[in-house]
Length: 307
Ligand SMILES: Nc1nc2c(ncn2[C@@H]2O[C@H](COP(=O)(O)OP(=O)(O)OP(=O)(O)O)[C@@H](O)[C@H]2O)c(=O)[nH]1
Image (cartoon, rainbow, N blue to C red; front, side):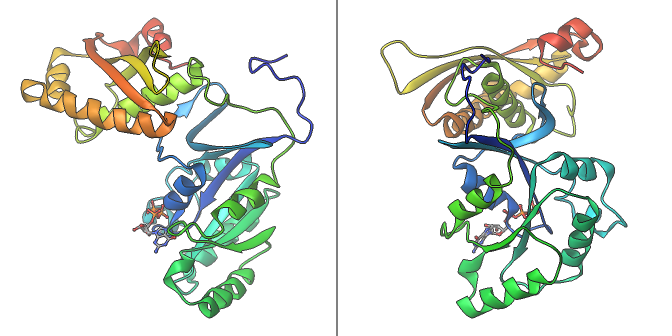
């Protein structure tokens, strides 16, 4: 028996995937289309993985967890001589890699560079994905599939368009095929589950950091105190959360003039949480000063930092 209450895993697959490709090739859009909700989470979740989780694809017989590939969004990284070690370790830790090449641009040095790196990471299977097929005629898609096939050894090569949904489901199927058999790693729709609360806390933290990232890069933490469906209302979830800063001056920044900024943070976070949970959300967000929380191991654990 596990925390998720399942004892059998026959035929069930679960595991991790990441997407790689030059900037702007449509990785984020495809990930969001696959996952079905727009979630962009940028910190790791302690229980299962240290990687930032982008989203989870739930299927009756599978769970595909899409992780972010740190740093690869920056062109600078791609122009470097090799991928940095964090990217490399992400690529080796996942069960399958989706390598994205857009249909509307000829295969270039950036694609070849990534393909070479992928050949070096070892045994992780790579599914090559020709993205943005809606932008070009079918014969161009066919040409691109051929061009991509010369870049390396791929488990599959599949064209798709995240814009019009063409074969997005198939991309999911092809990735899932490479996952090991196993238990669901995350509960579906279990709103009291801690990982779900951590995700929600992360969305709030992201919203709070927007626009003040340079001023308060590491000074904001968020704890979700409680999260539960409202009594007699199936379509509404109450989320109670605290936002911690280290100094009163930071509190003033986060709150903004007459509370305008905090209200804005609340609205943006609520929308993201609603997209994640697929229901309406009431967000009660309060702010507290927890002096020097970063230096206090007890505070850190309370705030969800287990390192
Ligand atoms: N027409 C069309 N446009 C797309 C498609 N997918 C993504 N785009 C557009 O291409 C641009 C880049 O998409 P992103 O998903 O941000 O690309 P990315 O690879 O994640 O980019 P980086 O974060 O810079 O690495 C955006 O303007 C998207 O709207 C698609 O299937 N069709």
